[in-house]
Image (cartoon, rainbow, N blue to C red; front, top):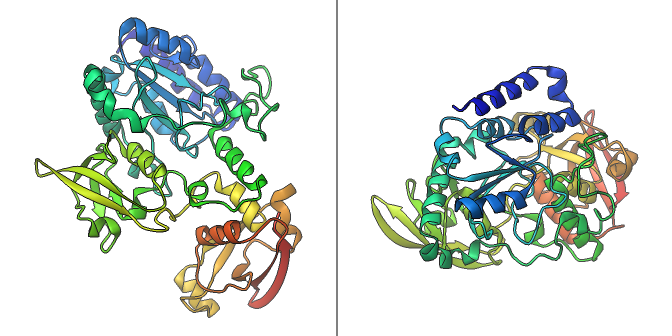
Length: 439
């Protein structure tokens, strides 16, 4: 390990040893700059400098977008930033750039799942994208990403870079789609609220546009148009489990499990298959597969090439009507959806034993209110009299069993702002009916 890297790691460990610092969002952001601003291993918050270095060295770029205050992916980010031995030798073959704010993010080049707190791009000096890395779900972090998986994606990105002239025609589908806005600050709901530079002398965390705010801004724009939310807006970057696939985080895009009876099962995908290309796009990671799914139409048959037992075979991934509609409750941006569709409530499924005690049939609605917003637009449910611990058994006349995600889907696609909805809850064994107008 080079002396500079060792000193950086010691600084990082020292900063992380103080529990007060670990809990302070502004201090986290300042400490990150202190640790990396003068690093010889990372170019900090300056993509243009990274591009210049890539042109001079003829290396590809590895661009890491990281939301510093977010707890998710913190340990993984620490390992990447400290140049963990698993990936250290490969990092030297990239120009490494660390971006810790979205204020000036170029949305015409960098598009990813904005519910992530860490996203990695492998790009050429002309910003041609070789691949993406970074996945998040309701599962534990280690079931989605790993350093081993990142290493394999890096190896493949380097191979692509060495063969760029041959590979680049296959990368057309990986490039960013046309963007209505150049940067997040151009969205109407964010315009005028943020400067290009962070306010390190003041409330620095609040001066930063966090990635989830970009998704929030997109949805606010959709809501203000008066149109109902589409599947694409509600279910961005679908987890492969929506088609029945669980991928191995230690590989690039290798199937770990196939759900029996799922569309992927019917299409012939099997555990152990390495999906090397989907819809003509070479895959470096699970994130690459999600990029294909994110941009897929409402129904489709996507050509897939898989490696099975050393041989390449061609399959088809079938996307049927409604295929996107999976669990979105884990997403940070679902807090905004709860405000719009549930008056600020967070709902959890009631466990079977609690259902039996409450005498609620297994096919009927039973959603426990885990949280009720306290302030502003998030407090609509609270002002209507809903309380934490209430069990929702009917919503707008619907009493069939639903998950929170399914109920959000119903309210955001079937109801409009200002519509009055009636809710029936169980409280202390008694039924109580309340109502509120959707904000």
